[in-house]
Image 1 (cartoon, helix red, strand yellow):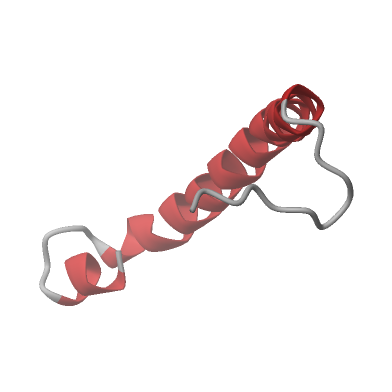
Image 2: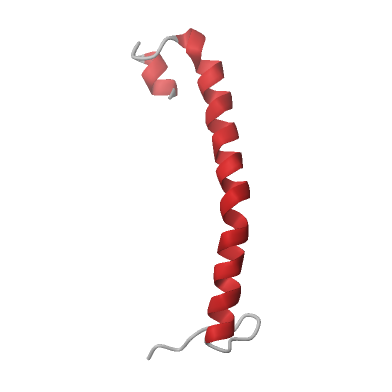
Amino acid sequence: MFLLCAFGIIDWANFKGLLVSGFLFKVFVAILDTPLLYLGVYLFKKRFNLKVNEEIDLL
Protein backbone atom coordinates (compact mmCIF):
# COMPACT_ATOMS: atom_id res chain seq x y z
CA MET A 1 0.00 0.00 0.00
CA PHE A 2 2.93 2.28 0.71
CA LEU A 3 4.18 1.76 -2.84
CA LEU A 4 0.74 2.49 -4.28
CA CYS A 5 0.75 5.82 -2.46
CA ALA A 6 4.37 6.54 -3.36
CA PHE A 7 3.67 6.08 -7.08
CA GLY A 8 0.50 8.16 -6.94
CA ILE A 9 -1.98 5.37 -7.57
CA ILE A 10 -3.66 5.94 -4.20
CA ASP A 11 -3.87 9.37 -2.60
CA TRP A 12 -1.87 9.81 0.62
CA ALA A 13 -5.00 11.16 2.31
CA ASN A 14 -6.49 7.66 2.10
CA PHE A 15 -3.40 5.89 3.44
CA LYS A 16 -4.26 6.02 7.16
CA GLY A 17 -7.87 4.91 6.66
CA LEU A 18 -6.85 2.03 4.41
CA LEU A 19 -4.13 0.96 6.83
CA VAL A 20 -6.51 0.92 9.80
CA SER A 21 -9.31 -0.82 7.92
CA GLY A 22 -6.90 -3.43 6.55
CA PHE A 23 -5.56 -4.13 10.03
CA LEU A 24 -9.06 -4.40 11.51
CA PHE A 25 -10.08 -6.77 8.71
CA LYS A 26 -7.12 -9.04 9.47
CA VAL A 27 -7.93 -9.05 13.19
CA PHE A 28 -11.60 -9.84 12.48
CA VAL A 29 -10.72 -12.73 10.15
CA ALA A 30 -8.22 -14.10 12.68
CA ILE A 31 -10.88 -14.02 15.41
CA LEU A 32 -13.27 -15.93 13.16
CA ASP A 33 -10.91 -18.56 11.75
CA THR A 34 -8.80 -19.37 14.83
CA PRO A 35 -11.50 -21.47 16.57
CA LEU A 36 -12.11 -23.34 13.30
CA LEU A 37 -8.41 -24.12 12.92
CA TYR A 38 -8.17 -25.32 16.52
CA LEU A 39 -11.24 -27.51 15.95
CA GLY A 40 -9.66 -28.95 12.81
CA VAL A 41 -6.43 -29.77 14.63
CA TYR A 42 -8.38 -31.37 17.48
CA LEU A 43 -10.41 -33.54 15.09
CA PHE A 44 -7.32 -34.50 13.10
CA LYS A 45 -5.44 -35.53 16.25
CA LYS A 46 -8.45 -37.48 17.49
CA ARG A 47 -8.95 -39.22 14.12
CA PHE A 48 -5.33 -40.39 13.94
CA ASN A 49 -4.92 -41.02 17.70
CA LEU A 50 -2.04 -38.57 18.06
CA LYS A 51 -0.69 -37.44 21.39
CA VAL A 52 0.83 -34.03 22.16
CA ASN A 53 3.84 -33.31 19.88
CA GLU A 54 3.37 -36.62 18.06
CA GLU A 55 3.60 -36.66 14.27
CA ILE A 56 2.36 -39.02 11.59
CA ASP A 57 5.14 -41.13 10.11
CA LEU A 58 4.41 -41.31 6.39
CA LEU A 59 7.41 -43.40 5.39
